[in-house]
Image 1 (spheres, rainbow, N blue to C red):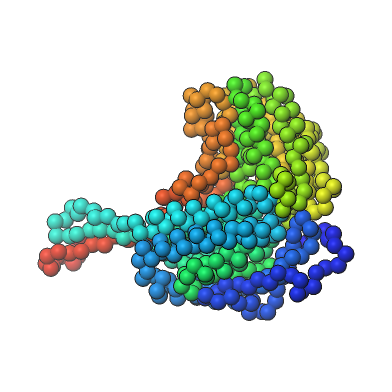
Image 2 (image 1 turned 180 degrees about the vertical axis):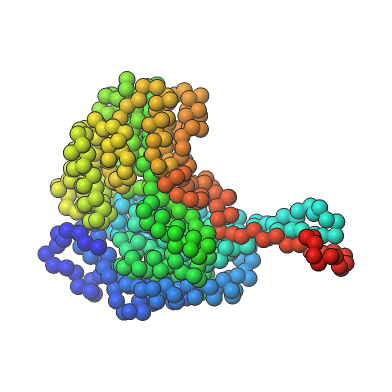
Length: 503
């Protein structure tokens, strides 16, 4: 990981905060003895030292997870799992301040956002604690009078959880809370760009009292670590959040082992604004959808599809708000937008800005890097004069960039909104409740907000259509992603039958 240094000298090894991997209930260094440094994208310098694991560390972690599954954790009741999940939720709440600060250091996310997120995070563990002791099978009426038939819900097994850099703990929790409730064990590989908060969460998990090997965390700078985990024959399920390109590779690795897989991937989500909408509310929703979190969110509402009669008025409102967004130190409670999380992503976003200009787009606000604050800042950007074929409309930028274009009819709005291989999220802005429901039903997206944007809860399913992924996270049904449904037949009479006929 590289960022532009702003200090006169690099910190010494002793000045860096030290983290260790968590394998088999122990905090350990990489078997190689190597480390790598995590960089603060605002300060532009290293702040933490992290073990640089290898495939050998992955092998050890998978073996540990398998041993826990075959041991005490595999025989633990749902009531015991629920107790530990509630304890973990409590401890996350107690450690919210530290975990939030670590995420700010690693990824440049705003403290004001991360402290709220970490204080809310326990709700996922409480919610799934409430399901852990309710994983019931069912008795099925048999068409054969001499048989009792029933089903059992059993854990899928060892889960490989591979998480991204933009919201490490939230997106890990989407997997971990439900998987632990189901009785699975985990090997977690966080992004090399933001590993520290996940390693710190392992300390909290250890404190909560989970048996050794139930949760393991392996870090590594080299892509081979994640690739080895995704394709590991000792893994039963892969749960991945990240780019669509990487998600395809993860899915292929999982399929080779005939493993279950859930993928939460990219998006290019539309926000449709009809002429009767409350434009001030829509402008606020657009800011929330694409400038919050510096646009580094899979569900970013980065395509504004606005009725031609209110285009200019709405662009003026959003541009005025965008120009007023306060950039700066993510630890400052007054800051509204922090830096891009790492230099590779910063360079990628700058490339999209230049590409948009080259293709004839006009920047109603922003359109370039901001050099006033140090770090990796991009100005909140709104592009007009784009078409459905513009690169900035077609491809996921993953930065604070909004592309705006117009429609004239409801049918055209839906055609433009669904003209994408992605299908993660979307919004409809209108005061006409009939139209709101009608359009929401026709949007090809896993989550649609009406007169709102960027709202989540542990009990509401989240996931996408098409290139936005496979499966759903959150909600009751997510438990099915982490369990197998076993059918059991019991012969009741002791009688024999013709062995050459289907029973």
